[in-house]
Image (tube, rainbow, N blue to C red):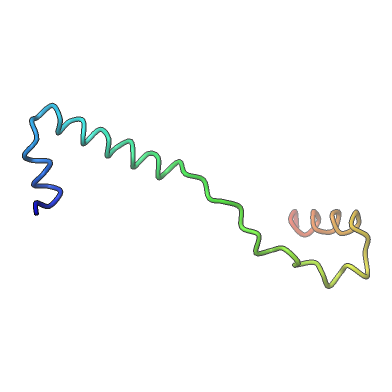
Amino acid sequence: MQNLSQRINSLPAGLQQKVFAYIEELKKEKKNKKKKLSLKWAGGLTEYKDKFTSVELQKKSLDWWTN
């Protein structure tokens, strides 16, 4: 079985250019791929649920983020 570089080298020049262009597009796609939102913070404010209302917690969390 041929490895990838041998297969690319066996192609005509025009097709090799297409392969290289495709590889560049794949690299761009990887860079532009956005990370999914992580929900590992969920439940992080449960210790405050008896002390504050949800609106007060929203205001507090905003204060924590900006300070």
